[in-house]
Length: 88
Image (cartoon, rainbow, N blue to C red):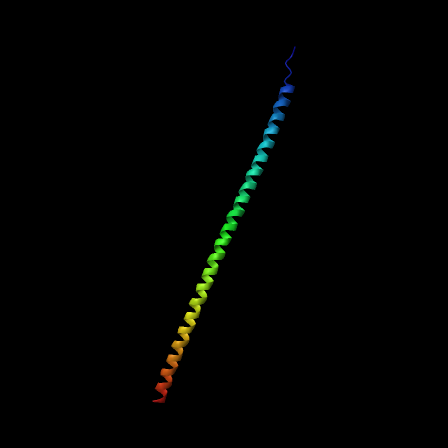
């Protein structure tokens, strides 16, 4: 009586295929979880950046306005001095 190894080989091959499918499913789940986590991180980062932009825009506007006022006052003072010097 000869030992039938065909059934054992088929069984091992099927078991290997099942394990490989499980591995691929786990890999896909892991990829999906990574993508979800990445999107959550992106959302948080975008919110932080928006808040920083609002702060920078507000302070930048005030700063720019102050600079414009200082520059215009400085120019008007210089114009007055120049006009005074010309009139002498």
